[in-house]
Amino acid sequence: MFSKYVKPGDKVELQTVERSILGSVSDKRAYTSKVYDIISDEQFEILMPMEKTKLILLPVDGEYDVCFYTRQGLYQCYVRIVDRYKSDNTFILLCEPTSNLRKHQRREYYRFSCILNMNARELVEEELEALENDEYNFQPGLPLQKSVIVDISGGGVRFVSEYKYEKDTTIFLTYKLMINGKEKEYELIGKILASKPIENRPGEFEHRLQYLNVDSSEREEIIRYIFEEERKNRQKKNGR
Image 1 (cartoon, one colour):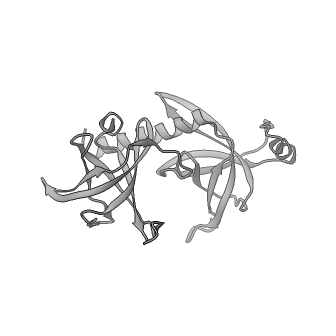
Image 2 (image 1 turned 180 degrees about the horizontal axis):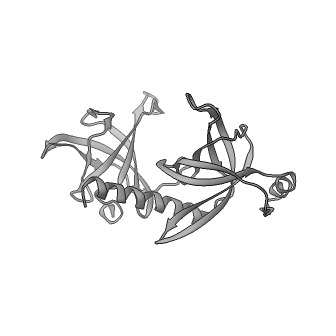
Image 3 (image 1 turned 90 degrees about the vertical axis):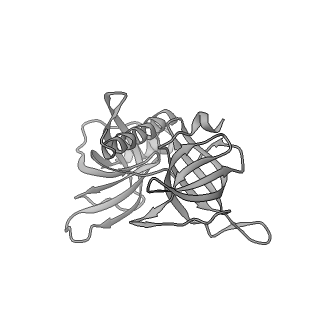
């Protein structure tokens, strides 16, 4: 089952699993890496994580909660590192799953750095009232503020604009992605989680936004877009 879903090149996120005497999990730290090779359903290799240019020597026998970013979605299992070694100038961790692989539903999503044009505006009173009744009635023709998305995930975006949105503001936003070779426009509603001025860039602000109305199919499309762009970046890096 493992090799059916997880493939070489898939991005992985490892979180430490440290248990107290009572068995509770504490002090988690996350690392990112990639699957190097699938040996069998019982063993697989990942690249040793790095922070900047420094290798992180994860210990043999260490246990980790691992999330796999696959083309079929997010999957999770617990793993134990059974060996670490160097092969063809590549530092590798040999891992064994200690639990079954399962579909992973999570509220946090991998953020993909990008540059995408976005337009947005605050919701007007009538739209906010409709939103309270679980209705999404956008008023057409209202002016939009130009912004630039600097990272995107299945849960939201981080964007830069010359307009400052206050924390907890609800906004309408629209941007376009290439989905299955065609440009698709997304019209979404989001909530501003944080806003701050950009250092050394007067008049510009950085915002973090969480989607409020994205449906499951749109979210999956955004995640697939991220995986596809990551794949293209890997191919460019490898000179393919």
